[in-house]
Amino acid sequence: MDQVWAAQVVKREQAAEGVTLFELVSLDRRTMVDFSAGAHIALHMSVGIRQYSLCNGPDDRDCYRIAVRLEADGRGGSRQICESLHVGDVVQVSGPFNHFALNADDPHPLLIAAGIGITPMLAMALECQANGRPFELHYAGRASHRMAFLPLVGERLKDATRLYAPDLNDGERMQLQQVIPAATLGRHLYVCGPASLIDDVCATARAKGWADDHIHFEHFHGAPPIPQQGDVPFEVQIQSTGQCITVGAEETVADALQRNGIYLNVSCGSGVCGACRTGVIAGEVDHRDYFYTPQEHAQGTEFTPCCSRARGAKLLLDL
Image (cartoon, rainbow, N blue to C red; front, side, top):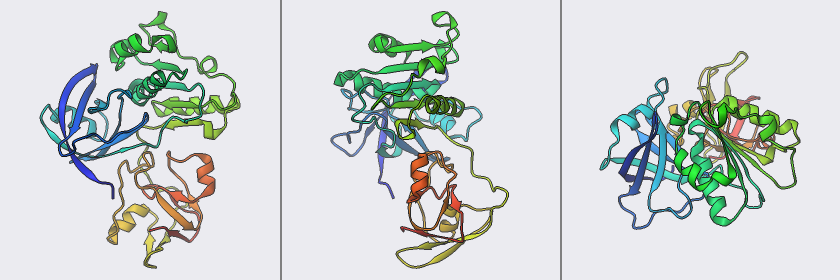
Protein backbone atom coordinates (compact mmCIF):
# COMPACT_ATOMS: atom_id res chain seq x y z
CA MET A 1 0.00 0.00 0.00
CA ASP A 2 1.35 3.44 -0.92
CA GLN A 3 2.28 5.75 1.95
CA VAL A 4 -0.35 8.36 2.74
CA TRP A 5 0.71 11.67 4.22
CA ALA A 6 -0.92 14.93 5.30
CA ALA A 7 -0.72 18.01 3.11
CA GLN A 8 -1.97 21.51 3.74
CA VAL A 9 -3.49 23.83 1.17
CA VAL A 10 -1.36 26.99 1.12
CA LYS A 11 -2.79 28.62 -2.00
CA ARG A 12 -6.01 28.45 -3.95
CA GLU A 13 -6.92 30.54 -6.99
CA GLN A 14 -8.90 30.37 -10.19
CA ALA A 15 -6.74 29.19 -13.10
CA ALA A 16 -9.51 29.52 -15.71
CA GLU A 17 -13.28 29.35 -15.82
CA GLY A 18 -14.20 26.15 -14.00
CA VAL A 19 -10.59 25.36 -13.08
CA THR A 20 -9.13 25.85 -9.60
CA LEU A 21 -5.41 25.81 -8.86
CA PHE A 22 -4.21 24.42 -5.52
CA GLU A 23 -0.77 24.51 -3.95
CA LEU A 24 -0.10 21.86 -1.29
CA VAL A 25 2.81 21.40 1.11
CA SER A 26 3.64 18.51 3.41
CA LEU A 27 2.84 19.00 7.07
CA ASP A 28 5.52 16.68 8.41
CA ARG A 29 8.38 16.72 5.92
CA ARG A 30 11.16 19.28 5.98
CA THR A 31 11.73 18.92 2.25
CA MET A 32 9.35 18.04 -0.52
CA VAL A 33 9.84 14.74 -2.35
CA ASP A 34 11.24 15.53 -5.79
CA PHE A 35 9.50 14.47 -8.97
CA SER A 36 9.82 14.79 -12.73
CA ALA A 37 7.43 16.12 -15.36
CA GLY A 38 4.44 13.86 -15.92
CA ALA A 39 4.11 12.96 -12.23
CA HIS A 40 0.86 13.06 -10.27
CA ILE A 41 -0.35 12.88 -6.70
CA ALA A 42 -3.46 11.19 -5.33
CA LEU A 43 -5.87 13.03 -3.05
CA HIS A 44 -7.72 10.75 -0.63
CA MET A 45 -11.18 12.27 -0.32
CA SER A 46 -14.30 10.90 1.33
CA VAL A 47 -15.78 10.18 -2.12
CA GLY A 48 -12.68 8.21 -3.12
CA ILE A 49 -9.13 8.65 -4.36
CA ARG A 50 -8.60 11.17 -7.14
CA GLN A 51 -5.36 11.69 -9.05
CA TYR A 52 -4.11 14.99 -10.40
CA SER A 53 -1.07 15.81 -12.51
CA LEU A 54 1.58 18.09 -11.06
CA CYS A 55 2.18 21.15 -13.20
CA ASN A 56 5.29 22.57 -11.51
CA GLY A 57 8.36 23.44 -13.51
CA PRO A 58 11.73 21.95 -12.46
CA ASP A 59 12.76 25.18 -10.72
CA ASP A 60 9.59 25.18 -8.62
CA ARG A 61 9.62 22.45 -6.00
CA ASP A 62 8.49 24.18 -2.80
CA CYS A 63 4.94 22.90 -3.23
CA TYR A 64 2.82 20.43 -5.15
CA ARG A 65 0.74 22.38 -7.68
CA ILE A 66 -2.39 20.87 -9.24
CA ALA A 67 -5.29 22.24 -11.25
CA VAL A 68 -8.76 20.72 -10.88
CA ARG A 69 -11.56 21.20 -13.38
CA LEU A 70 -15.01 21.05 -11.81
CA GLU A 71 -16.86 18.21 -13.54
CA ALA A 72 -20.57 18.76 -12.97
CA ASP A 73 -21.43 15.28 -14.26
CA GLY A 74 -18.41 13.53 -12.74
CA ARG A 75 -18.17 11.10 -9.83
CA GLY A 76 -18.07 13.81 -7.18
CA GLY A 77 -14.33 14.08 -6.58
CA SER A 78 -13.73 17.35 -8.38
CA ARG A 79 -16.82 18.90 -6.81
CA GLN A 80 -15.73 17.96 -3.31
CA ILE A 81 -12.22 19.30 -3.91
CA CYS A 82 -13.31 22.55 -5.55
CA GLU A 83 -16.10 23.27 -3.08
CA SER A 84 -14.57 22.12 0.20
CA LEU A 85 -10.78 22.56 0.04
CA HIS A 86 -9.61 26.01 1.13
CA VAL A 87 -6.37 27.59 2.29
CA GLY A 88 -5.36 26.07 5.62
CA ASP A 89 -7.27 22.82 5.12
CA VAL A 90 -5.46 19.51 5.44
CA VAL A 91 -5.94 16.65 2.99
CA GLN A 92 -4.52 13.14 2.86
CA VAL A 93 -2.23 12.57 -0.12
CA SER A 94 -0.10 9.79 -1.60
CA GLY A 95 2.64 10.08 -4.18
CA PRO A 96 4.09 11.56 -6.20
CA PHE A 97 3.99 8.83 -8.82
CA ASN A 98 5.08 8.98 -12.45
CA HIS A 99 3.86 6.64 -15.19
CA PHE A 100 3.98 9.37 -17.85
CA ALA A 101 7.55 10.65 -17.83
CA LEU A 102 9.42 12.16 -20.75
CA ASN A 103 11.75 9.73 -22.48
CA ALA A 104 15.29 10.74 -21.56
CA ASP A 105 16.60 10.16 -25.10
CA ASP A 106 13.82 12.01 -26.92
CA PRO A 107 15.53 14.78 -28.91
CA HIS A 108 12.38 16.84 -29.66
CA PRO A 109 9.19 15.89 -27.74
CA LEU A 110 5.86 16.53 -29.43
CA LEU A 111 3.30 17.55 -26.78
CA ILE A 112 -0.44 17.67 -27.51
CA ALA A 113 -2.98 18.85 -24.93
CA ALA A 114 -6.64 19.78 -24.79
CA GLY A 115 -8.56 21.25 -21.88
CA ILE A 116 -7.28 20.31 -18.45
CA GLY A 117 -4.86 17.95 -20.20
CA ILE A 118 -2.46 20.89 -20.22
CA THR A 119 -1.40 20.11 -16.64
CA PRO A 120 1.21 17.39 -17.31
CA MET A 121 2.13 18.99 -20.63
CA LEU A 122 2.93 22.29 -18.95
CA ALA A 123 5.34 20.51 -16.61
CA MET A 124 6.92 18.70 -19.57
CA ALA A 125 7.32 21.89 -21.58
CA LEU A 126 8.86 23.75 -18.65
CA GLU A 127 11.24 20.86 -18.01
CA CYS A 128 12.31 20.79 -21.66
CA GLN A 129 12.82 24.54 -21.64
CA ALA A 130 14.92 24.43 -18.46
CA ASN A 131 17.10 21.66 -19.92
CA GLY A 132 17.53 23.36 -23.28
CA ARG A 133 15.73 20.57 -25.08
CA PRO A 134 13.68 21.57 -28.15
CA PHE A 135 9.98 20.73 -27.92
CA GLU A 136 6.70 21.50 -29.60
CA LEU A 137 3.45 22.11 -27.68
CA HIS A 138 -0.03 22.18 -29.21
CA TYR A 139 -2.77 23.29 -26.79
CA ALA A 140 -6.47 23.37 -27.70
CA GLY A 141 -9.52 24.53 -25.77
CA ARG A 142 -13.19 25.32 -26.22
CA ALA A 143 -12.54 29.01 -25.48
CA SER A 144 -9.55 30.96 -24.22
CA HIS A 145 -11.20 31.81 -20.88
CA ARG A 146 -11.53 28.07 -20.19
CA MET A 147 -7.86 27.31 -20.91
CA ALA A 148 -5.80 27.02 -17.72
CA PHE A 149 -2.33 28.60 -17.57
CA LEU A 150 -2.85 30.48 -20.81
CA PRO A 151 -0.90 33.60 -19.67
CA LEU A 152 2.03 31.46 -18.49
CA VAL A 153 2.07 29.44 -21.71
CA GLY A 154 1.84 32.60 -23.78
CA GLU A 155 4.64 34.35 -21.92
CA ARG A 156 7.19 31.60 -21.24
CA LEU A 157 6.52 29.03 -23.92
CA LYS A 158 5.20 31.05 -26.86
CA ASP A 159 8.12 30.31 -29.20
CA ALA A 160 7.41 26.57 -29.11
CA THR A 161 3.62 26.61 -28.64
CA ARG A 162 0.60 26.74 -30.91
CA LEU A 163 -2.77 27.62 -29.36
CA TYR A 164 -6.19 26.62 -30.72
CA ALA A 165 -9.57 28.00 -29.66
CA PRO A 166 -12.54 29.65 -31.42
CA ASP A 167 -11.42 33.07 -30.11
CA LEU A 168 -7.69 32.61 -30.74
CA ASN A 169 -5.67 32.79 -33.97
CA ASP A 170 -8.75 33.43 -36.12
CA GLY A 171 -10.45 30.33 -34.74
CA GLU A 172 -7.84 27.94 -36.08
CA ARG A 173 -8.63 24.31 -35.23
CA MET A 174 -5.99 21.76 -34.37
CA GLN A 175 -5.58 19.58 -37.45
CA LEU A 176 -3.82 16.41 -36.38
CA GLN A 177 -2.73 15.58 -39.90
CA GLN A 178 -0.72 18.81 -39.86
CA VAL A 179 0.35 18.69 -36.21
CA ILE A 180 1.71 15.14 -36.31
CA PRO A 181 4.52 14.63 -38.83
CA ALA A 182 5.85 11.35 -40.13
CA ALA A 183 7.75 9.40 -37.50
CA THR A 184 11.43 10.20 -37.11
CA LEU A 185 14.11 8.23 -35.29
CA GLY A 186 13.96 8.64 -31.52
CA ARG A 187 11.15 11.18 -31.38
CA HIS A 188 8.26 10.59 -28.96
CA LEU A 189 4.72 11.96 -28.82
CA TYR A 190 2.81 12.75 -25.62
CA VAL A 191 -0.91 13.52 -25.42
CA CYS A 192 -3.33 14.28 -22.61
CA GLY A 193 -6.96 15.32 -22.88
CA PRO A 194 -10.37 13.86 -23.66
CA ALA A 195 -10.50 10.21 -24.70
CA SER A 196 -11.64 11.14 -28.20
CA LEU A 197 -8.54 13.30 -28.71
CA ILE A 198 -6.24 10.58 -27.41
CA ASP A 199 -7.82 8.01 -29.73
CA ASP A 200 -7.50 10.35 -32.74
CA VAL A 201 -3.89 11.26 -31.93
CA CYS A 202 -2.89 7.62 -31.51
CA ALA A 203 -4.61 6.59 -34.75
CA THR A 204 -3.04 9.46 -36.71
CA ALA A 205 0.42 8.83 -35.31
CA ARG A 206 0.28 5.10 -36.04
CA ALA A 207 -0.85 5.81 -39.59
CA LYS A 208 2.25 8.02 -39.98
CA GLY A 209 4.62 5.34 -38.79
CA TRP A 210 4.96 6.13 -35.09
CA ALA A 211 5.67 3.01 -33.03
CA ASP A 212 3.35 2.31 -30.12
CA ASP A 213 6.20 2.62 -27.62
CA HIS A 214 6.85 6.16 -28.90
CA ILE A 215 3.23 7.26 -28.33
CA HIS A 216 2.46 8.14 -24.70
CA PHE A 217 -0.90 9.18 -23.31
CA GLU A 218 -2.64 9.83 -20.03
CA HIS A 219 -6.39 9.46 -19.63
CA PHE A 220 -8.37 11.41 -17.03
CA HIS A 221 -10.78 8.56 -16.43
CA GLY A 222 -12.29 5.64 -18.24
CA ALA A 223 -15.65 3.99 -18.32
CA PRO A 224 -16.33 1.95 -15.18
CA PRO A 225 -16.03 -1.80 -15.75
CA ILE A 226 -19.27 -3.44 -16.74
CA PRO A 227 -19.87 -7.14 -17.41
CA GLN A 228 -19.51 -8.09 -21.06
CA GLN A 229 -21.32 -10.78 -22.97
CA GLY A 230 -19.43 -14.02 -22.53
CA ASP A 231 -17.90 -13.15 -19.15
CA VAL A 232 -17.70 -16.26 -16.97
CA PRO A 233 -16.35 -17.01 -13.50
CA PHE A 234 -12.65 -17.87 -13.14
CA GLU A 235 -10.11 -18.31 -10.36
CA VAL A 236 -7.18 -16.27 -9.18
CA GLN A 237 -4.52 -17.90 -7.04
CA ILE A 238 -2.30 -16.03 -4.59
CA GLN A 239 1.31 -17.05 -5.13
CA SER A 240 2.45 -16.43 -1.53
CA THR A 241 -0.27 -18.50 0.15
CA GLY A 242 -1.71 -20.76 -2.53
CA GLN A 243 -5.22 -19.46 -1.77
CA CYS A 244 -7.65 -19.74 -4.68
CA ILE A 245 -10.45 -17.21 -5.04
CA THR A 246 -13.36 -17.39 -7.46
CA VAL A 247 -14.11 -14.22 -9.42
CA GLY A 248 -17.76 -14.02 -10.41
CA ALA A 249 -18.93 -13.18 -13.90
CA GLU A 250 -20.21 -9.81 -12.72
CA GLU A 251 -17.48 -8.77 -10.28
CA THR A 252 -13.93 -7.54 -10.69
CA VAL A 253 -10.79 -9.30 -9.50
CA ALA A 254 -10.23 -6.44 -7.06
CA ASP A 255 -13.72 -6.91 -5.61
CA ALA A 256 -13.22 -10.66 -5.26
CA LEU A 257 -9.89 -10.15 -3.52
CA GLN A 258 -11.38 -7.58 -1.17
CA ARG A 259 -14.23 -9.97 -0.39
CA ASN A 260 -11.54 -12.34 0.86
CA GLY A 261 -9.65 -9.76 2.92
CA ILE A 262 -7.01 -8.85 0.32
CA TYR A 263 -6.99 -5.12 -0.31
CA LEU A 264 -5.28 -3.57 -3.31
CA ASN A 265 -4.54 0.10 -3.93
CA VAL A 266 -7.57 0.68 -6.16
CA SER A 267 -7.93 4.30 -7.22
CA CYS A 268 -9.65 5.04 -10.54
CA GLY A 269 -11.51 1.74 -10.74
CA SER A 270 -11.45 1.78 -14.54
CA GLY A 271 -7.93 0.82 -15.61
CA VAL A 272 -6.63 4.32 -16.19
CA CYS A 273 -4.18 5.12 -13.43
CA GLY A 274 -2.29 1.86 -12.85
CA ALA A 275 -2.39 2.23 -9.06
CA CYS A 276 -3.67 -1.35 -8.60
CA ARG A 277 -1.36 -3.00 -11.14
CA THR A 278 -0.46 -6.52 -10.09
CA GLY A 279 2.01 -9.05 -11.40
CA VAL A 280 0.80 -12.12 -13.28
CA ILE A 281 2.94 -15.27 -13.01
CA ALA A 282 0.78 -17.60 -15.07
CA GLY A 283 -2.42 -17.45 -17.08
CA GLU A 284 -3.70 -15.29 -19.94
CA VAL A 285 -5.16 -11.87 -19.18
CA ASP A 286 -8.17 -10.28 -20.86
CA HIS A 287 -6.86 -6.71 -20.70
CA ARG A 288 -9.55 -4.02 -20.46
CA ASP A 289 -7.43 -1.12 -19.21
CA TYR A 290 -6.20 2.16 -20.66
CA PHE A 291 -2.90 2.06 -18.78
CA TYR A 292 -0.67 -0.44 -20.57
CA THR A 293 0.67 -0.29 -24.10
CA PRO A 294 -0.23 -2.99 -26.65
CA GLN A 295 3.26 -4.44 -26.17
CA GLU A 296 2.73 -4.67 -22.42
CA HIS A 297 -0.64 -6.31 -23.00
CA ALA A 298 1.10 -8.90 -25.18
CA GLN A 299 3.72 -9.59 -22.50
CA GLY A 300 0.99 -10.32 -19.99
CA THR A 301 3.22 -9.96 -16.93
CA GLU A 302 0.97 -7.40 -15.20
CA PHE A 303 -2.68 -6.41 -15.24
CA THR A 304 -5.15 -4.04 -13.61
CA PRO A 305 -7.47 -6.11 -11.38
CA CYS A 306 -9.94 -3.24 -11.10
CA CYS A 307 -11.21 -4.02 -14.61
CA SER A 308 -9.27 -6.76 -16.44
CA ARG A 309 -10.09 -10.45 -16.29
CA ALA A 310 -8.77 -13.88 -17.26
CA ARG A 311 -9.14 -15.41 -20.71
CA GLY A 312 -8.86 -18.89 -19.24
CA ALA A 313 -9.78 -20.68 -16.04
CA LYS A 314 -7.11 -19.24 -13.73
CA LEU A 315 -4.57 -16.48 -13.14
CA LEU A 316 -1.65 -16.95 -10.76
CA LEU A 317 -1.01 -13.56 -9.15
CA ASP A 318 2.24 -12.23 -7.74
CA LEU A 319 0.71 -11.43 -4.37
